[in-house]
Length: 183
Image: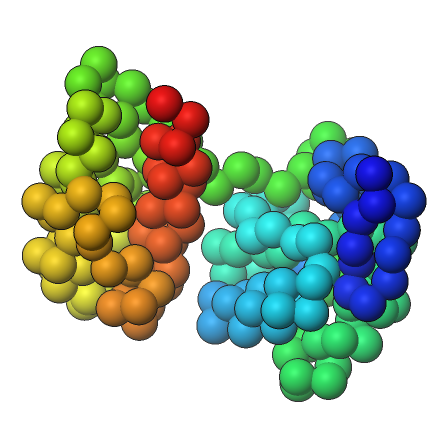
């Protein structure tokens, strides 16, 4: 298998689990979102995770990346003027980033939680039946625009949300779509 990292071709699996990993710690969520968008648009294999408690610094998100690409990733981030507070190699179980997703199956309904946002879908119709969590001012608007629509009909939270809650709901929405596509 050939994996692409940035503009380089490398032999081996494209998944982060099979590589030494590092995490990028940022001052705030806006920087995490900008960094993620910049890195992914340039082909880097990264993912947003929850920070391990040992390095939590205010922002509830970190970016996990292939550690071997640290210098190239930092160079890419400098080009877009986004600099992490810390770059931490994941060297012990205590430094493992926390998966943002939790899923709960209620029989007919499936709930996916990402950070503090929860999205619940009727598994038979794939209609969104509930959105809850968070404390951002756009959560009621997001719920009004999405509840009652199927996953394929609803606007994505990234299109209509503008806060950390909207970003977390986008993550839950993407995870829900991934899980529903497996049925």
